[in-house]
Amino acid sequence: MGLIWWILPALAGVIGLMLTFAGMGRLMKLRVAAGGLRFLFGIGFLGAAGVGTFAGLNLQTYKRLTYERPVAQVTFDAVAGEANAYRVRVLLAEGDAVTCFVEDGSEEDCILRGDEFSMGARVITFKPMANMLGYDSVYRLDYMEGRESRRYNTATISEATSNGLALSKNPGLDVYALAEEQGSTFGMEGTQFGSAVYAPMGDGLSYDVALTQDALVLKPGNEAARRALNREN
Image 1 (cartoon, rainbow, N blue to C red):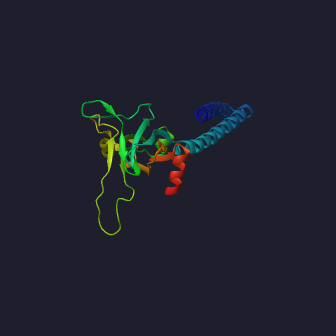
Image 2: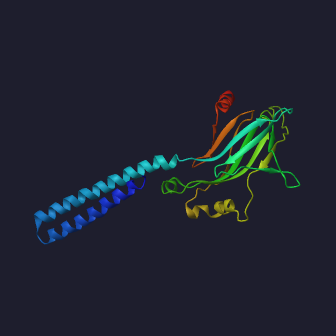
Image 3: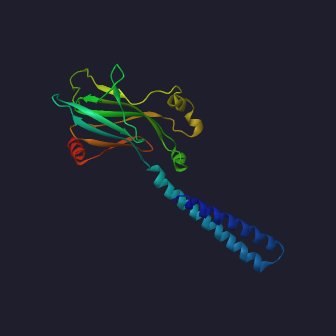
């Protein structure tokens, strides 16, 4: 559907140029009536093409700059007999589930401890004009951790521990480092960065994590998570 905003102005522009040049040709042959009519119609089509192009760019701006896509769905279930321990299920947007393994290679439940979780990713962004042309921000999930929300105090510098799991492996070529070094050459923003979201953990809570053109965002996946976020705010 979005292509129509480019196809119609392009057609109008081509027709406008053809009529304009045809009209100029006839005017040069002193065929004033026929030449003038074609020339005026040509100018009209070129004007319509310009208006259509600007309208399309305007609509594309709203659509592309606010574009977001799903990254993962995160769900927590309490571990029986252990306080502040939660079995976490992470379903990625591609349909794969994050799995945890023990030393012998067998699969086990992924457990996070604490009252709050955080999920982080490395994000490479593009300039707004590149977004409008179809270049969307890209990401690689980095980690997910459990922690205590009240792990620091205001009196002194204090230590805190967290527990978590890696969500990706570096395949070899560090695209993130390459983007930092050469990104401006290809229209990427000068700042590629890490982005993270955090929210309370609790039995039965579910969250949806998405990526905008700038950063990760988190939304409640069920009513229980919505209430938990409202209490935090």
